[in-house]
Length: 325
Image (cartoon, rainbow, N blue to C red; front, side, top):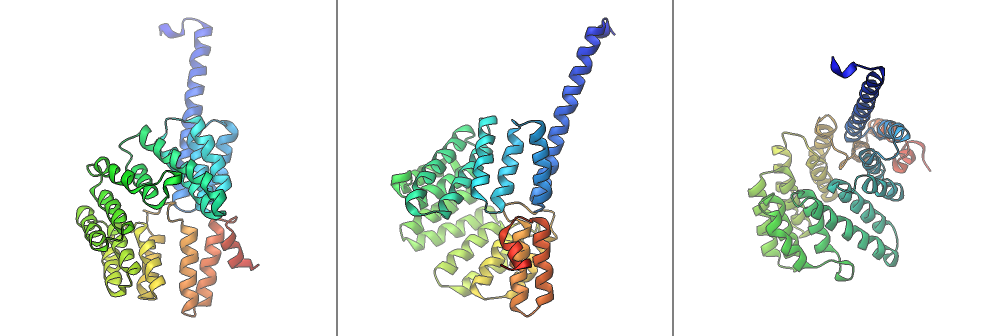
């Protein structure tokens, strides 16, 4: 072939092949790490990601995944450190901006109110940047909308801003748009409209998550029977066995209703291929352990505590549950 007419050309070809193979290997490592992360196997995911970053310190995707590893374990400082690297190395990534904003939000929730203002402003900037980078990023818009509703104006919040986001969100996810409208109405103490919007979200998405939101609304309004009915419907319709099972089980446990259903929901999630790091499996094992302990199954609870630590040895609640102290 003409390409190999000289040794120098041959060396260039081999170099290109080596570079391509190296890049492919890094992508494979990130993909494997993300799969482990979603399964809750954060110790294994962290080991792979640290190895990948040792080979290429500017792998933005690896930094984002490692950020999520730390975020799932409530390690805000480490999560921020990795996500800041992620956005530096891949400034066009809308998703990395979302995770950076979430990490800032976690840090804000862990410190005193005065110090939290600075992180809230950073959170605001990250979420807005995420939407600017990708106006079709539904999760970024949803997170930004929740921030606008919850945060005071001094750090960038405002119901008018949340309302302005609805037309952009509605055509991409009617469910999340109605959810945002419900949150706005609830903040205004217009509970009739809030309930109607949560029901519209259910009708729009027909998803287990929307039913969980409706159930949580009824829980907050001290209407436990309606809450349980919505949560039962969420669990029954959750054929994918998604993380909505965990949210439904959490509310049922708070309500002290249907512990049998809550326990089954957690078991179903842990055996599901739809697990995600937004409901980390090791935390679900701890949640299940608490249910088992309450009904007197001490041995079962210990097995769940041990399972949690096996997945996330640095997660303090898991370590304390197994070893005490």
